[in-house]
Image (tube, rainbow, N blue to C red; front, side, top):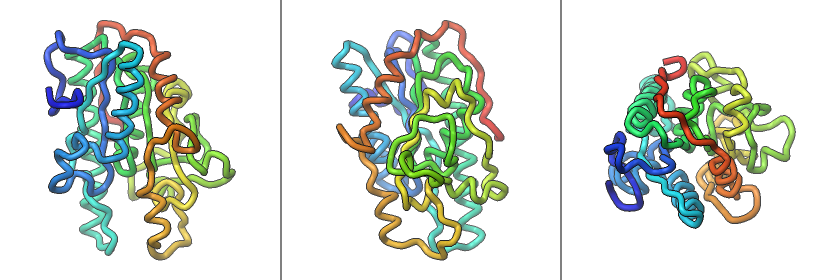
Length: 263
């Protein structure tokens, strides 16, 4: 077990199981080089969210540990090109499968621990794609999707960010190109949607994609990279996440198998 309650991969022995377990998926390019070890390997915003939730739980005598989804998190091919996009889409598929495998391994090792799944950008897509199969899985406490490329303008989720108060916006780039991206275009089942927090700001080129835009502007990129959990305002997602997590009942002893949705 590493610092800050981080596991290096799959679960440790059952005797060390915490009350909650966080599986965090980094965004595009956040696992290159030093990113493999910085921020727990799950990227800045997902790791910051984990730390804040950990503090909230600790204040109430509860424990949580974490692991990063082990996948490439390939960078977005800003210069275009078929090869770059194939690498990116392959990374999404790899991450979707890795999330499923890590979830199954962990819940087999720690069947009484509740799991929180969280991701940013490409990592949010990876988590989102697993939620369909996890809708009635009793091990799942909550999910957090930040700048989700698979986001729907209207879903069953708890929506935050500026798109939450702006009707008709907030469709992810994966939904716009659903055939190529192998995106599920249906809403999340309500039983998991009501435990999923989705954060997206207007103008974010990933979760609020504009099909009429021909190139990525610096302003739009700045929106996408500026997410950080706050104590108030549209980015105060840790407090409602804690409410959802704290309301989760104890998981049963039997582990549930998971196959990645669409994998």
